[in-house]
Image 1: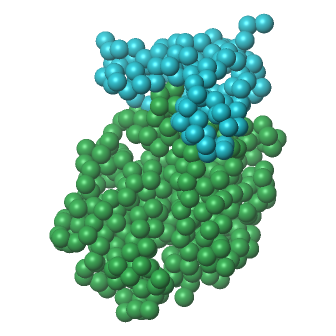
Image 2 (image 1 turned 90 degrees about the vertical axis):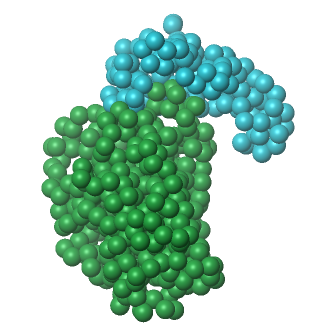
Image 3 (image 1 turned 45 degrees about the vertical axis):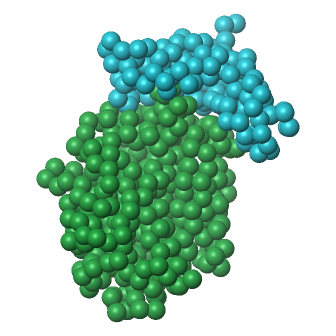
Length: 384
Length: 131
């Protein structure tokens, strides 16, 4: 098993790119990452994406992007794990290099959502929950998240206003991220008065659908400096699954897949929560940030919201989260979100996070969640 | 028009038929032939009573394509008396009166239509128990 590092980063801004197709988004991120890695070619390409078929009428996108990127003929495969597709693709790319099957690999996360109406996008996102026993019943992805939030509030004695700081922190950090979709801060009042989408989830609890692509280039750590002066080591990579339907879980308020994948990642790396300098949570909904912090061991059950209320999640707090805006303010092109998380942690490890730099950041963690917790990919990156 | 797909889950949607595990007596919904608790084979049909209580709920204002006509509507996770949790819409309610712990019972209602002149898909919803 070889040690693997990230030697190139690329991303498009997240937003509504009327003028850019899915294949072009993927190509642009890949092109930027190759340039950053001072590389002309890769041996293999893994593309994380959830909804290309349903929202753009195009499957088979890894072969497509490889061809349009001038890499015709290489190994290229699309990987899907609902909203965890991005990090799932990273997992596969990592395994290829760690296992000695390729020396230089590109992983792209790409999603194009804004060509379609909101109702179509909502139906598409609901393919990440149980089609026959959740979506068929009228539940959307948001509806399930909302019921988890309400139950959490009931069990731990919180009001929806107590979740405000997750959104406020995300927006505050997006101000300093030139690739973020929403770069203006929000106030407590704005959060409290936001209209419900599926109550208690409001517009400001919920990350926006968007277009975007992010890419990393991977190589064995041993030769990483041939490509980039600031390689970032993949210290751990772990995947776990849980039931797709939230109602099938042993405890719907415990993200068991997040706990298992975090534990596996910590175990292989010989690390614990206290060693982590920042965490990119999958804040598709504010409740998921709270549950992730608890599942990973940064807080006890019911303590995730308190971390936010006490400001511990800010850039100078005990466990900074969503340091470049998170899904909420950087935006959520779903299949790409996991790769944006990785690029952002890598920027932090390189010391390139600008005004959002977490001081002395040496170990960064990213957790990408599929559906409402059915698949969770945890990655730990290390400054070399 | 996914006739075969709807037909496959008729007994679940109309009658709340799941399974009981012969090994640990756990009640299973929907049926899956392997007990999620003890992981042994579990193929014995079991019809749930339809009685339960609200575990959580939410009123949905932004629906997915195909459910726009019903919006806004209230969805819930319901703890069935026999143990499993199911997801379903609540019906015959005034939104203000829904609460966690509220007793509910299963009824059969239209879940969705397949287009304006398409087939109606029926299934379980839950209403407050009439006292």
